[in-house]
Length: 271
Image (cartoon, rainbow, N blue to C red; front, side, top):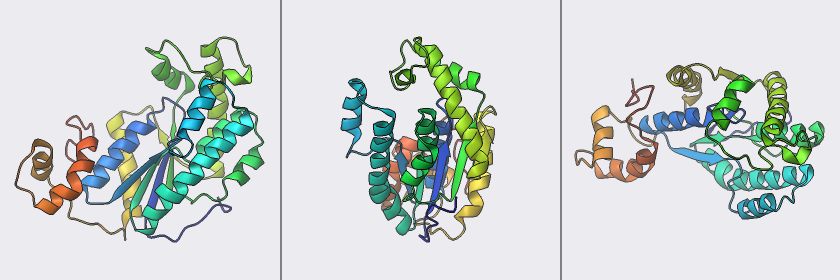
């Protein structure tokens, strides 16, 4: 990834990639929970979430106005805005940034929509190179089953209906996702993505992910001491044994990340 920005910021950037239904969002949520419990300052950014263009994108999708090129450009605008406001500032401050989807999503989806591969790569040359990029590899049929189970309808662009692959939305979705999988598989080597077996049990995937992240945390400043089990209980259950500064800095973040059914460790260990 020599053409993309090797940053010298003190923070770390970890990203997850994969087709819909790969389980990447679950894993990055668990990683966030663990990092917060260990005392790190964590920021989160997800694909297509910039307030600058989110409403415009939504309206254009509903009216089916987007061509493959305009689709690519509007997502690049979203990404540029988030890079300037949500990614680079925390990295400069020495924080950890987690991204649910990064430039590789654009590389996979845009090329699957027949946008020129080199053009898309050049479009994102302003991007910061991640500290580590995880690709959650999953058989297509497994991901399709996860996504389609219980779904009564697929959205126009989600199903790739704009490409004319099939008149049947589910078949179009399958064909479109296969194109995306093909791009991800090629990028795994090209960009040296860290490949995760997304068919493994959730706890095992998370254990592997934390083990791979841990070496990159050396030198990252913690703003507070790691939390112990009883401290986490007090935050969630309203206890008063914690110091006020702990409660103020942690409670809001940890309450929405915490889960009593954390499949890895109910309370992530600091040891």
